[in-house]
Length: 473
Image (cartoon, rainbow, N blue to C red; front, side, top):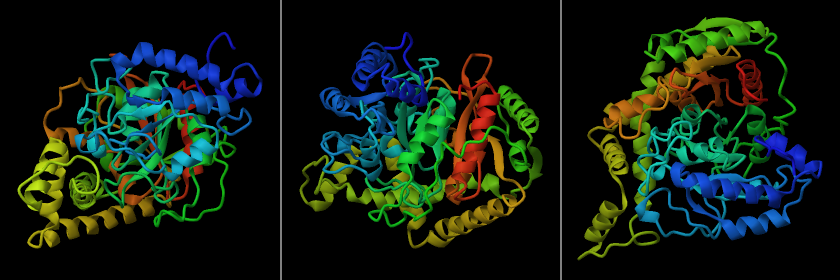
């Protein structure tokens, strides 16, 4: 075994291929780390101790992932394992099948140590909305890890897994990645199968990798990106080797800065990180272009109409009849009401009610229909500016991680997604990567977004900037 355990997936693969390390040895070290550290971090909802050990023993060291521990967010199905979605309504639900992306990871040699915590049904930006407990940020245990994929990002940041998968509907992979100082990638909508992901907003949901560096995210994307006939939104695309596509410089690239987002107030250290990244891009051969997306600040209210509308429809299936929690009532209506009132938390109820309101006959045109029109307008504006820029550079979040319990106003919480939501509305690829720390030592994240299907290019550009800013490639 190497004197120092590999910290990244790429280092791990090299050690396994060189017979310096086995999947079983690494998994045992991982479980020891989890045993010592997770009582404080609380990244996992449940572990797969015996099953993971069995998988590690059977792992092929020559496979793409070679037995690497990859954590799975607990709204993504894994056969025979609980899939709670961080909710009391599914607290004891056991998945009857595995999501396509889980099947792909397992086939590539991944070992899943456990299922990770999340905001209930992926609705939240801090993982405080989990029905079970909040997850803590490994960088500062008094602070949130972000959300909704806070458990997955905290697991990677704490060294409990070499990678993880999460879901991103409005920034739920990228925002917590920024807060925890890791990489989070949201692929183009339709590139990674959603089959087996418990739906929140069906036109927005994406499954994406979380890793310690950009190269590791590219390695995971090589496994995850594939057409799936079981997902009607999955798109057939030519095969791309995302790792091989990583380039050493930004020579000839045009990096866009969105004028309207510069008006949004951000923490001074984040603004400084943006300026450092601009200079690094120029030094690496890129040109900086200022672009205008006039309606981009409308993305936040648009999202918080469309996403609740879709969630209210998707969560209608949780009625206590077919699966999950069941509370008896005098009749069917009371049974539904009691089950959903007991099973759903405050934020989920809030979004269901908002969604039902904006879809109601009297308000559909005024809210939902108008929001879909503005969504298309924002998408068209982004498409237009991405003709003159190859990628767009923004902060990932307006601030670094806040303290647990510090943000109680839902509208203030929603604002943490102001920079991440546009990529979800447009279905475009976007990545958050670490870009230093603030005065309190908390991680700062920056974001790149590109045109649809430019995933390999976005990863490549992010890798150059990540490395230039001190990241370990």
